[in-house]
Length: 527
Image 1 (cartoon, rainbow, N blue to C red):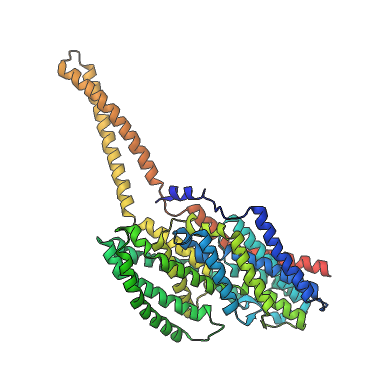
Image 2 (tube, helix red, strand yellow):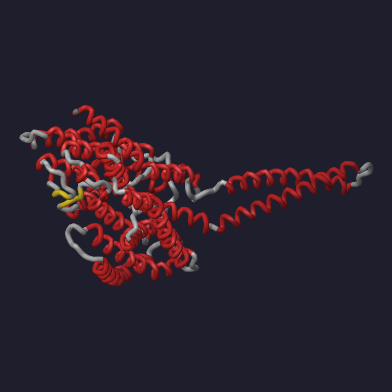
């Protein structure tokens, strides 16, 4: 399927989604509930207004994380039709919330990624204003990116917000520029690593299944092996990232548990895959169905890990505001009250349910067309890239990895699809050959027409040439049109790639500038 077919998918809407006004009303209802709960539950504290504002901004940020970032976990599964949109939202909501509550942690760093030094802000009020500005600016940027259909890093959004507010509060010396350099490096490292790993997995699947004469027989051997590798990757990933707040393990231990899990998984799924393979169609479509269940598990596990890790982007600054308001001091790490965790977890789920489908469709099928094999490769890239990068000390973004994986499988298809290249070449050669034959027939017709004394055979040949020229002209016209159309076939939308990369590049500076402006506005109002 080429990009023309993908474009036709854009017209399909999700019928189960409420109207725009209804979604907006539900979002405001959640923010209102957070506002009233924070107001009345902390009514005895004299700095209550600052905490209420921080809670409202945190709720807004959490909803934007759900609307934008969760798409990376379930988008490929939806695009490949392994999951319906509604099924993806339900699974993501359950596992995002579970990851947040179960493994979100009891303590969170108040300054994401250590990008500024809070010791340089002596006044707790200034610190509270800065964190409030960071939350609001990060949320506003995510809101704009979601509206434009650009999946961006929520971590980079809040990092930009914290940096901008920090600079506005204490000057450029407050920023750890080495850390910022690592974040900038992640813009390049994450999508490239994700794209390469996803492309390698897809190439392996094509070479060992798709390009084989008996795809079903090959799938019986290869799919169980791929699923066992997936088990190793995800168990290791969850041990290192998803449940790190519950169980502290080093890389070797986590990898060992992952390897044991993969061995067990291989022997469990092999007979199931063999049995399922005997019932499917003996073609690529049938093979694709064997990846459906693994994809659903991948979407669930990625959502759990995302909830455990990225809820801090919404509640980190809010937890810092709560601690500064209640304790009157500025700390680098603070405890997370249950109500703060609830704002983050519930907000992510609400944002996903109300506004998530837009970005899920973008990641799932508006960049390139995905089937289950390609989506499986992207899911594997998401887990393995984080594991590899964390052990090499490389900064990566889960958003950039997932979208980079989508780019990777799309560009690999363009590179490997030699059938299209051969088709293009054959159409071009046939067009040239038929045009030459047409010119020769026209020349012959001119010569016969100039003859003064024509015999019966000449007249018969003239009639035959007129008929052949008409047929050949129509044929050449169709071949020319076919050739022009074939030249335009692309499997990755170039405009989507440009839009997303541009959004990635400006996320940190845009959030920083916006945050500084919001900080000065708050300071002006409060002074």
